[in-house]
Length: 378
Image (cartoon, rainbow, N blue to C red; front, side):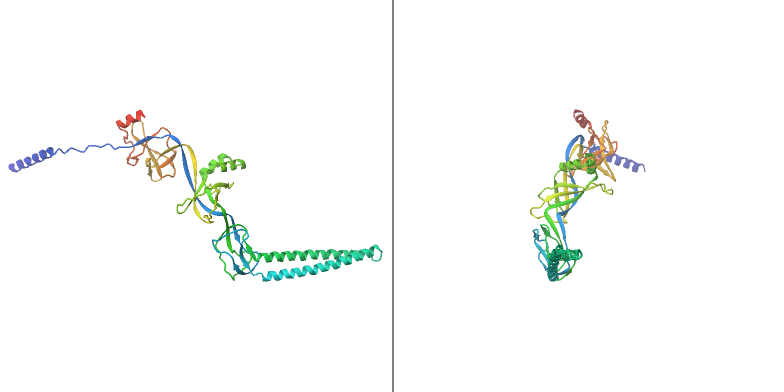
């Protein structure tokens, strides 16, 4: 038994001696490295984005004003037409017959008027010679007046029939692009039947809603007509970005703002006018309006300095004792994927952690002698 214990002791001694000879050291605490910055205010341009839908300056619903069978469709969907171009032709035979009947009635009325006039003038001469009574003169005068009224009515009927005949040929009221045509030749149409939509696309409007922040600025600016016009004139140019990411080459200008704030969304509806000389914009196109506003005296920090924790945004501020403390901040996206504007939570002169912020814990020492020396020099 004694020999076994002696052997075990010798073995353990050899193991300890072997480990010592291998120079194995215990692990040391390695201090993490962090990058910091001192925040300050600066001016920055921020792009605001708004969902928008294009609409022609003069979008006209084409409907017939008379009923009948559709005889001819003179245009195709997507065709560019000029004002006055013929679009549809409706069967005009009934309208022509009505015009002919009205013209015949006018001729009969004119003949009756002429007879009544002759009779009135004859009775007037006879009355002057004391041959007929005033009663006969007055009757003939009234008949003449009735005949003239009948002529006026017949002439109005002719004009109405002529207008109805003209309605059988439907023309473009504005220059633009033909939309969908839901009818076909041979269809029976009536007043109110939608034949197509004509989009006057020489100038296009993008309709969108200004958000609450801009509305508050506008309200501060003033809501009377003069101030509103000046506010609109001072707004920046607008860029239209299509859904595929393509930027429309022509810039637009805000031309109108509704005078009433939507109580549910707190927004104002706005229109931006875009020139469309090449005809590349169509009614119904959806995209994004981008307007770049200059923001003055803003605190801007890198996005990697912001730590997201559930519904909170945290930034680690370096205290005087070189330890980190988390502060809640509210942010606004600059739009470049790299920076945030801090709207609350930080002040100019605060020192914050940027790179490595995700690895910081509350109260951790983050500035070390070399960094502290730089801080003092800074």
